[in-house]
Image (tube, rainbow, N blue to C red; front, side, top):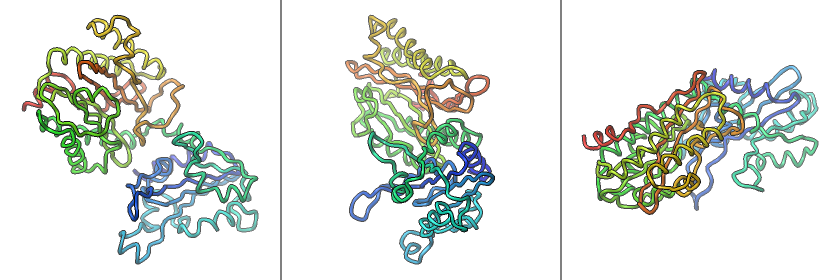
Length: 421
C-alpha cells in the first residue's frame, strides 16, 4: 500500500467533510480473551483505508478549516519493557514512510487528550482552526442499540463538549471504499491467488476417510506459507448433508466415499480479501446425480457473471440468478413450481468484497466500475445430502466485468482430472 494511495484517499475524505470540522478514527485493540490472553488483533478497516497502518491503539485525526486541512497521527511510544516483551515499536519515521503524514504531525498516544482539548476543541491561540462545530467518528454498530467503539473512545470529549455535532464518518468512507483502485485490485488478486493455491492443495489431498479439519489446516498452512497473513473468515469445509447449512464452521466430520465437500474460503493480502467457494467429489468422481446438480449451479454461476455490468442493480442480479436456478431445478424435476426454489436456494447470489468479506457500501444504487462483488449461486438438497456452491470474485468494469478468479478451476472434467493427477 503506497503513500500516494492513502494520501489520495484522505484528500477525497476531506472533500466530503464539512468545513470547521474534525474526524477521529481509531485503529482499535484486540479484545480481551481470558486472564492474560487476547484475541488476534484486526485493524479497523476505515483507519487502515486512510493510513495503510496495521497497529493497535493508533489514532488518526483529520481537521478541516475554512482554507486549510491538517492530518495528525498518534502512535505508541517505545519503551524498554514493551521492546523486551512484545518487540520493537513502530517509530515516527517508519509510520510516516507508510502513511505519508509528516513526522512533525506524528505524536505519542499520551499527547492525544491534551491535543484535542488545547489545539482542536479550544479557541485559544494554540487552536489550529478555532473551535470546530462537527466531529466525524466511526459509528458502525455490530448490532442495534450498541454504541460504536469510536463513540465509546470519544465519549468523554462528547460529554464535555455538548456543542459538538456528531456525524458519521461511515457515510463518507463506505461510499469511498465501494470503488477499488488499482492498488486494491492488485491486493485482492493476490488474495485470490493464495486461495487458489490453498484449494489446489485441498484437491491433491482429498480422499474418503479424511477429516474436514485436515483440509482446514492444510488451507491455512498453504496460504500462510505463500505470504497471506490469515484467512478473512473461518473456513467452511462442509461435506455431505452439512453442506446444506450455509455457515457451518465446525469442520470436524470425516468425509465419506461418494459425498461432496463444499469449501468456502478466503485469504488476506495486505488486509484485502478473497472469497471463493468450490465443491469437490471426495473420491475424485462426481456421481451422475451430483453432476447434473453441479452443472446447474455452474451454468448459473457463469451466466450471472456474464450478466454483471454497470447500471444493473444487486436486486436485478439476484433475481436473474434465482430465476435461472428455479428454471434449472424445474427441468431436473427437483421442484414442481418455480416458487419452490426457496426450499433449495436461500441466499443472495452476491455481496461486495474488499477490506471486509461482506464489504461496505449501499446495495440500492446501480453497479458502477470499480466495484468488486462475489457471484455465488448454490443448490442445497438436504434429503439427498448434497450441497453445492460455486463462488467467484468479479470486478465491474467500464465494458462489463472481469472475473478475477477465472484461473481457479471449476469445470467437472478439470476438477476430476486434478484430483486424480
